[in-house]
Image 1 (cartoon, rainbow, N blue to C red):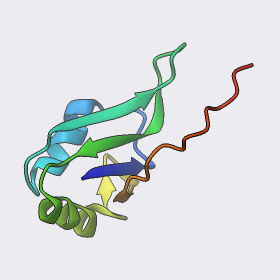
Image 2: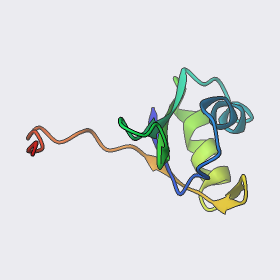
Image 3: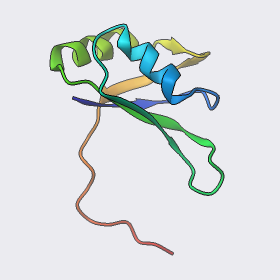
Image 4: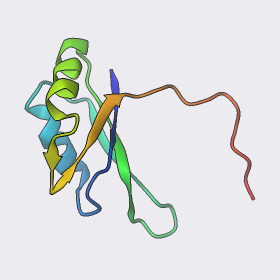
Length: 88
């Protein structure tokens, strides 16, 4: 299951994110989304967990929980929309 994690601290790293979710099960990947030009965190990321029951437990435990000084939002990620975003 792919999870969306929002309201992340800008200082949090991919490893910090992985560690927070590994308390609830196996983590396939953990990635904080960064601005292409500045490299600065955009304040959200994605965690992939292969076992749905472990991912659901992570959602229950971490949604609105404090991570690195901020209350994070955790839910199942929605698939990307099919229509491409315009580039200016």
